[in-house]
Length: 204
Image (cartoon, rainbow, N blue to C red):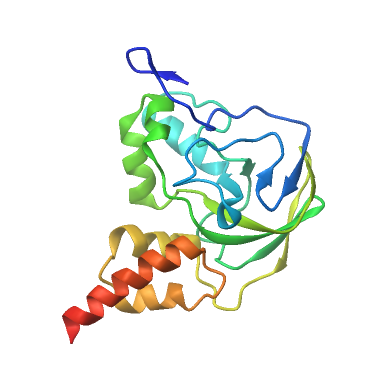
C-alpha cells in the first residue's frame, strides 16, 4: 500500500471481495497477514466489522469509505459490539467460529484512509470490530449467514471488554469479569492478568 508522501507499507488491510473462500484454523485461504505481532494466529483467525458503523464514520468524516476499510474479513450486519459476547459460537457458512476478543485498531487504518480522527473515534466509541478463532473449518460464501449456535453464559460483550481495556484500565472488577471467560484470547488474557497483578499489588 502506498500512503502519505509516496511511502510504502506491506499490509493485508486492502482486501478484495470474493464469492467464496475456505476458512482454516489459521484464517481464510488466499488472505494474508503482514504483521504477525498484532494480527493473525489461532485466536485472531477472522476479523469482523459491523456494517452499520460505516454510515456513522462516513457522516463524521464527510468522506466515503472503501469496502473492508478496516481490513476485516467479513463485514456483518446485526452484530454490533454491544450484542456480541466473548465465547459466543457462530455457524459461518460451513465453518464454526468463536468470538475471542475485541479488535485493537492500529495505525494502518489511518494510513489507508488518510483520516487520523477515525482511529481515535473507534477507540472512544468501542466500535472496533472483533476477532474469532475457528472451531470447524469450512467454506464461507458471499451470501453465507452467521447463526448463533451457542451464547456464552458469562455474557461479557465486546463493547464492555473494550470499555475496560481502553478506558477503565484500573477497574479491577471489570478486568476480573473479562478474565473469568475461559475462551478469552490468550494475548488479551496475558495483558489483563499483568494489569490486574499490578493493580492488586498497589491495593495491598
